[in-house]
Image 1 (cartoon, one colour):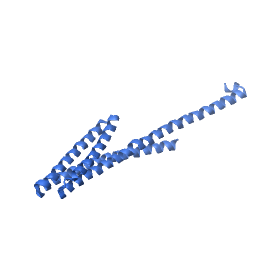
Image 2 (cartoon, one colour):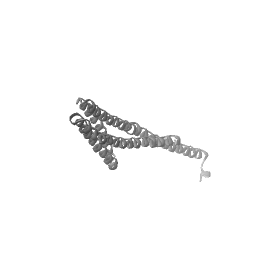
Image 3 (cartoon, one colour):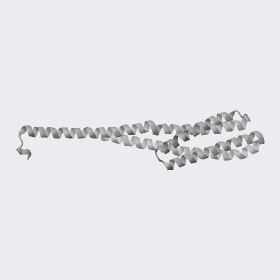
Image 4 (cartoon, rainbow, N blue to C red):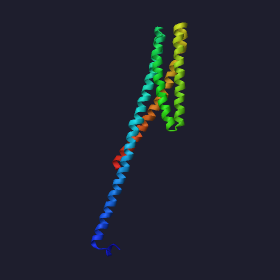
Length: 185
């Protein structure tokens, strides 16, 4: 059939085929570029910021621990206000994570974050009890609470590290996917 066409028609059909292949290639590049931009946006707007959120939460946990230990050592209750501020920052980070997991319908991680929140609240309450025991009941009473306080803090720290690792792994996965898409494109 192609042989029966005049040369002008053959040239037009060949040119149209080249244009179609070019347009298909452009469409494929456009789709790949769109996916690449989505991956980069995910890293920029969610994954890396949530690594920072968990780091801030851990710094706040340490702050609570340090302020309550200072209150215990100095018997100066002014440190309670600083511990309260650190606790608010920690719980603000918890709320950011919970909000993200609700939006993603990620009930498993939402429950894990609720466990961290409960453990932190226990840590904070135990720390205040410890500080008051040191102030009002003496060294032995405070020391009796100190071990539980330290264990609670370590347990929260371990759980936060798992969330940090999860966010870093997600960033690495998205980056690898984006790099592969860029190389394919």
